[in-house]
Length: 69
Image (cartoon, rainbow, N blue to C red; front, side, top):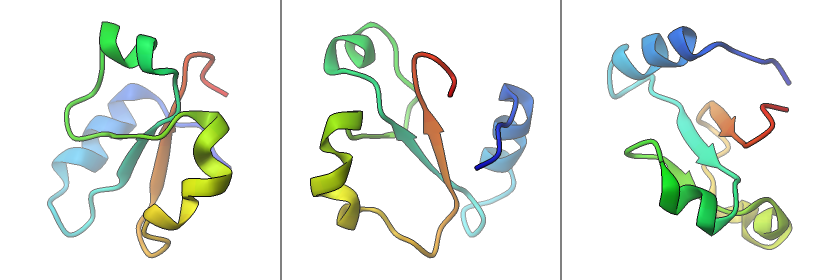
């Protein structure tokens, strides 16, 4: 797993629809209600084990979390 900076994510998102990553927001619902990234997929961290099949393994996945870990 690699960490990227916001500018790197912006470049990835602007690269075109064929190469855009899935932005996976793993924060809690109340955090997403405060602010979110348009187009991101929200699956709280605790739900990942039962919902991981909803993610496309062929696409790059960028996780967005409160702690940045």
